[in-house]
Length: 205
Image (cartoon, rainbow, N blue to C red; front, side, top):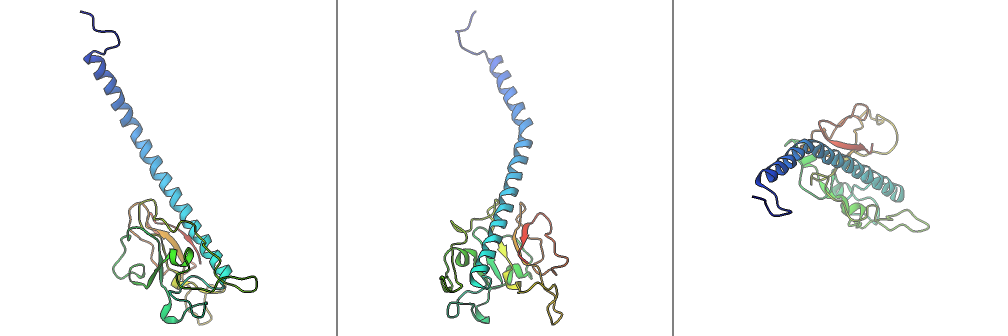
């Protein structure tokens, strides 16, 4: 008996569906790898953009963004000093005794997009805040975790060691990477500092 024109037999449908399933299984590892690589690239670009925003801030203001409140428009007092700047998103997993977790924090957006501390504005005759340095705020990394900056360790000058022989530490703009676990120690000497695990970061200092 002939079947209607344009119709499919059960066997034909099974063959087509099996072929689609085989192609999907063959292509899925490549698709997963592509998505992973794209997320890594995007996160690396974000860390570089935050780094450049911090550098532009320092050029305009004459100091780095590390104060919760401006003092007469300039740097704040010791009581207002920030250890960690954080972006939006979920908090990455870090060790309990880690500065990444327990330092005094403020939002990157407060410093780089909205001037929440109240820094003096830049004029033709004086240094000052001339942002926003990042447009659209500070989005989470590609895995929806916060970017972190251990800005409290920033120091002026280019010496590796300070005059009192105290070690100068690396300052990172960093993401915890795909696993969401921040493995890079927050206090590493500048001379030997490296990002750990699958963390993605760029050095400010």
